[in-house]
Image (tube, rainbow, N blue to C red):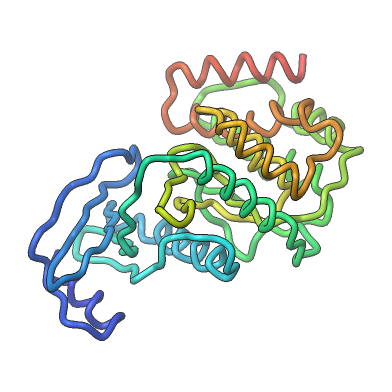
Length: 286
């Protein structure tokens, strides 16, 4: 397996690379991650089962999309492929350092600049991708309230119902969600899509974002997600607000947007996330 990966790296970069040392890295609940090195080079490798290749291809495309914006720092994609029994994604290795207030300020500024681009007129993406291991549908729609209520909440509720976890009548909940967002008319922004502390790191010169689940949507969903599992420091929000102030009513929409991520955790991990999702549904819709 490692020989196949090394050969593909060599072809992509036009170098001679052999894996001399590999170290398993901790932190991911979805993939197995390794640091591999040899011939003076280092690379970050994600592994999963062979049938997960599509997940890595989607991550590759999202990273390449974000990399089009020169003010952002994301890991460079080296290659993506399969061995006999594994799918792999190879990225440049970035040695992260401890977080700093200046790093969080920079991250807020960079995210605001990304969200201000508005170079897409509709909500969605050119392909479906994944949030964790869950398929994330991204069919283009012109109406944000319809997109979010149907392709985010409705989709997650349907997946849970198919596994025997009902949260109420899905059509009713989708319509209630649509009504809550009906008066909110955001412009589509390119989103990271899964912006929590585990998907952010810091280099001496810049913050780094990784593990994206990109689509064009309401920028508020990224900001909401950043407060769900380990809220970002206030310096991040202050620097974001200075460049691109949030719309009135964000605090009322925040819980609704975060319900999508809570439902996804319920789908993936069950347990306490199912209870959290049930309580949030009751709080928002009953």
